[in-house]
View 1 (cartoon, rainbow, N blue to C red):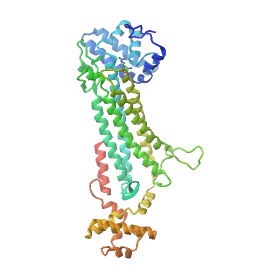
View 2: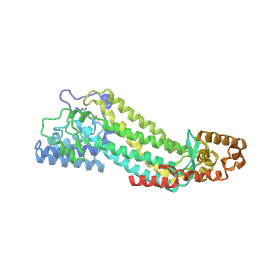
View 3: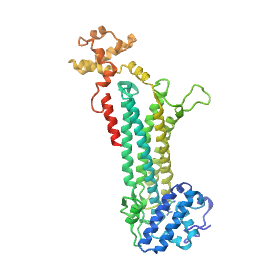
View 4: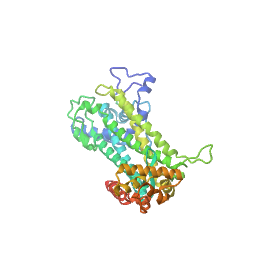
Length: 456
Ligand code: ARG
């Protein structure tokens, strides 16, 4: 069958070329946005007298029927159409006759597709934000529960200083809060209307772009029609925000995987979020966390793919830009699965506080506090650091920990040591002395939780 754009050419294309060219199998998910956009366009054409009031009303009614029929399932996508825009217009024309052919006045698929994608992404951002807020709430709840649960804090994956599990979790809450910010910011740039840019140069018709933009809930109109049809920055912004968020989820996933290993045993994931092995009966694998980590790489790929597609494109629209949607959809679909999975995993995991505490007791993670003890009694920090290191070495030799090293061993190194050293290096004391803003003591973690909850 000849294409709707048959005219200069016969419109008869090779079937392999058709398959290669067509985007309906992925852009059909924008049917709602496409139809809403067309309804606003028909209303504008009528209001401006570009078509008659009756024609405008007929188009709007026809479009609204198509939407209802698609949603009820009584109308199916025709996968032989080139894209969703052609499909809707074809159905409309089949149903209404000649008046259907008037819809595309003062418009091009170039501004139409940009409009649809912006509307689609706008909704995706809202959904992602809702998921994110739920996740942050869970993180805060679990942090509150464990604001006094002592665990080793790590640098270089070596036990470093005692912290609380609540403090550690709240670090993720801060990252996720920045993600919220990034999505809100990206939404501002998504929410600019390109419609009315037409093919690239604007139009000779007396259109009202502001009217259409407002009808569709946009906060601004693209100020240059060439940019209006060529700009895909909003897709990049979106995928960059998704990539950073996925990176955060991936780091947390990595920790969840470590923590659930027998080597750590800091947490136990609920059976609902683990899988067994097909051969090793003892296994409980954290597949969900591994998949979040794995899918992060794929989302980075989505971002890189579009960056690469765009880098060599002359202005304005080029068909290469049709490649934007699969990347964007994939990134959106992936993150919309990953956040709730992470949420469920965190909400249901069992925290093994005793194991965390036992690990904290084994790593000499109170050595900094011991050095600070000497400093507070007048010793220069570097000397205190050296003595503390030597005492750790002595513990390793004797097979004990700082808490059980006899006082004589301390006083042999420095007369500044007294029996109160044992209180100083008590892990709970170490944690609760870290009262600096953002630090690990219970009251500081409480403040962090309050800050995050208020920011939501
Ligand atoms: N399917 C196309 C896309 O996704 C729609 C725009 C096509 N415009 C054109 N002049 N061929 O980009």
